[in-house]
Amino acid sequence: MYHHIIYIALLLAALLPAKTMAQVGEYRNRFSVGVSGGYALNSVTFQPTVIQNMHGGLTMGVTGRYTSEKYFSTLCAIQLELNVTQLGWKQDIRTIDETPVINPATGMAESYQRDITYIQVPFFAHLSWGRETRGVCAFVNLGPQLGFMIGEKTRKNYDSPYTKENFPENFSNTIGRASQVAAQETMPVENKLDFGIAAGAGIECHINKVGRFNLEGRFYYGLGNIYGDSKRDFFGTSSHTTIVIKMGYLYDL
Image (cartoon, rainbow, N blue to C red):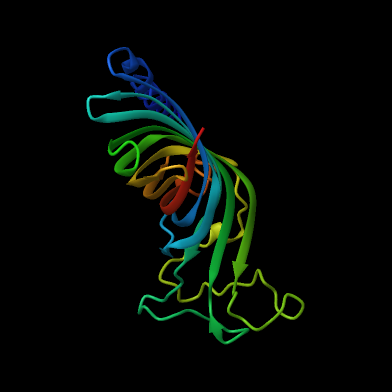
């Protein structure tokens, strides 16, 4: 736990040059605000292993950016975001022969998905190269990210025509599964606070008097666990890994 906090502290320290280099670079003083939205592909790294497909969910939020200087050909800025993002996991329930596990009560394949909604706050060093105005530039984002869970929802046997009234949603068929790890199916998230490291890269196009449009691919590596990770807990690891594709719009104030 403590070494994870040290990683975050070092990343925060790495953001300082974007401000301190203003003493030797070309001074800038530009604030930009805007909105963004996209799609997040997520999985949860469980130990013991839970076999999964990628879980898909939406992400949207607001962005603030302060550009402080141009250091040689690099524009240096600090970027803060406030996003609402749907993460979670989607299990791939199969037999050792790679065939679906059938629920005897419905005659249909077993399925399980957990949707976990977070408010996320990434804090980035934003570096870009190319046309500062009236053109296209490439950029990278790097920094820590904090998240707080605001809700979770389970979708189990969601391909079944049965309703909750005539079919128990919490009934599972674990017989014949390639993986017998099923404890997570009945465990609510224990740790609402999530934290980790995010990095992204993309392109941004500035259109005079209209604003800045950008397209970014981003990767998030969670350092925290959604479940307890002590020796008496079931899972030793339960952390998020996310790939995000998003588009945004910024307006220079």
